[in-house]
Amino acid sequence: MKQHFTKPITDIIRNRHSVRTYNPEILDQELKDSLREYAADIKGPFASKIRLEIIDSLDLGEKSGGKIGTYGIIKGANTFIAGVADKSEYNMEQMGYCLEKLVLYAASLGLGTCWLGGTFKRSQFAELVGLKENEFIPVVTPLGYPADKRTLFESFMRRAAGSDNRKGWNELFFDGSFDNPLKQESAEQYADVLEMVRLAPSASNKQPWRILKQGNEYHFYLEQTKGYGGALGFNIQKIDMGIAMCHFEMTALEAELKGNWLVKAQSPLIDQVQNHDYIVSWIMQ
Ligand SMILES: Cc1cc2nc3c(=O)[nH]c(=O)nc-3n(C[C@H](O)[C@H](O)[C@H](O)COP(=O)(O)O)c2cc1C
Image (cartoon, rainbow, N blue to C red; front, side, top):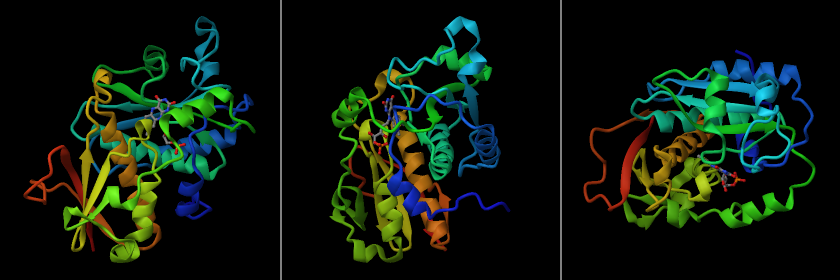
């Protein structure tokens, strides 16, 4: 099998940041082909069908003035990836997992991306990807060469979302119960794996993932942010969950820590904390 990543996944994750200001140079065809080839091989842990379509503003023709619409949030990008989902269960987790794999691959090639769940023209993308009846587009990302400098507006947006701050381990990872924070030492070889989840991007940097260690299992829970994202018509924080799963699994596999995903019939914690929705578990082998 072709070796796609030439740098450790931990380096790629640590160095990735959302990029909203691009150098307007057209993306090299070879890079685009390589991304399409990688995208075609991505398989998520769930059964939902996902299409990741790489599209160019060149495909737009005259009628949109040759510009892909992001309400001024993204500057200079000519290429985008559209995440097309079906309407099945776990479609959002699957989207987060699959698109993040492609985002990290793009980052390893030196390309910038920025997950967009709200600020893009859905109808324009629907036309470009030939959207089918049972499909919709929850997210897209620009794809391109990062500009040397962020615009002032982009710096303002990063500050507004608190993009440079991540929650500490004590708020995210737990040992046996949700009132017992997991210590890095107790996570042993999984310390790096969890650290890579902590650094994951999430919508408005809400970081809604909570992970509970029980023996040889890590259970993933979603702490929904009250009143957040309701108007979108889909649960954007489940996309965040899929992104976290992607970081967890890629880091674990690189460290040769074997395991598999399992959705248990019931939340593993009986006295489940309110507002924590059980999603999935990683079972170590
Ligand atoms: C599912 C998802 C949706 C997002 N939607 C938007 C968006 O609509 N507009 C935007 O400017 N940034 C969006 N972001 C980017 C986040 O604000 C960003 O990832 C977060 O602040 C952390 O910053 P970083 O990616 O630079 O680490 C989104 C991120 C995710 C994961």
